[in-house]
Image 1 (cartoon, rainbow, N blue to C red):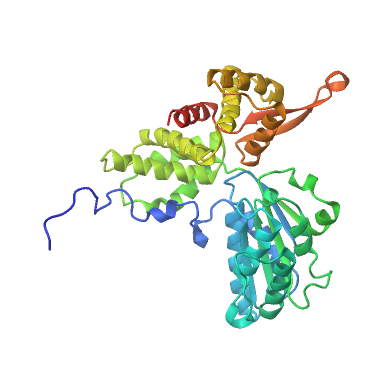
Image 2: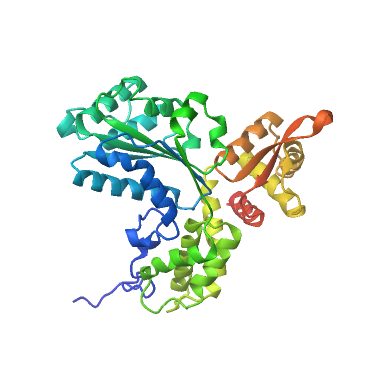
Length: 401
């Protein structure tokens, strides 16, 4: 064995045993889904007819980020495919991230590509180059050729450009597009009012069953993190680390993703400091780092003026923390001042409105319509969903780099 080792890299990880358990994309085993027994049972009941080759209910699932919506939808779909197979029913599910595939064409291509087995169907589903209607025709053929029942999960369904794919999928059977395959749609949204803006025809066919996932409480978050604690080596977690991380996350957002992020970052901080244990004091540092990194990722690639608009809202939020939201015109006044300081010509008020909408689309801020009565009419207020201090800090770093 060579003794010329390279001391730049650590060959033995003293902290993590299986870090993958703390990755957001990791789908836990059955025993690791915590705090959602009732929701899992209700979802299973709604899609249960699919086990016998019958049409499952179309579902709409609401809830804030990190409340287990996608996790439970994927889990139920995987279980359904397995149990249906035991009953002699051929089924499958397709998952679409609508934040990424936000046009009708992209979404239907993803569904068709996911479900197609070219060796069986002799059909190709190219990444691009076909018309939307051709993608649909190939999808219908794929479904009728291969399956008895299919579930389609549309995650962050509110990010779709329009409702057309919802209409096509939820009415495929009655419109005669499918001859034998039954299809069920599971829409997932972080926005509780998403249904209000749906076309009435889509609403009637898509929203057969609705579910609301509440934020996790501290006990549930503690159990979720405890279930993943074997990501760490035995004995490296101080007993107070998980309770502290759970309490912090429950108080601020009830978001399991962020809670797991905090736990992972706390381990990485211990690693970087050369500690053999993950200590409670690292949890607070980890929480700040997790928020900062997440927000930095959200605004990566944004334009200077997009950042100036956010900076204006952060300044208002920090200066008047008692205010719940700020009018577009008030944000614009501060934005103009920031432009003067940066020696940059300000954009028009209309363009700033568009930039605020883009930030709302990314869930950086929340918009609400208010009525000022007959004297003022209606107006929009904007409230940061991120910690304004984190926003300010990251924007300053970004502008300096």
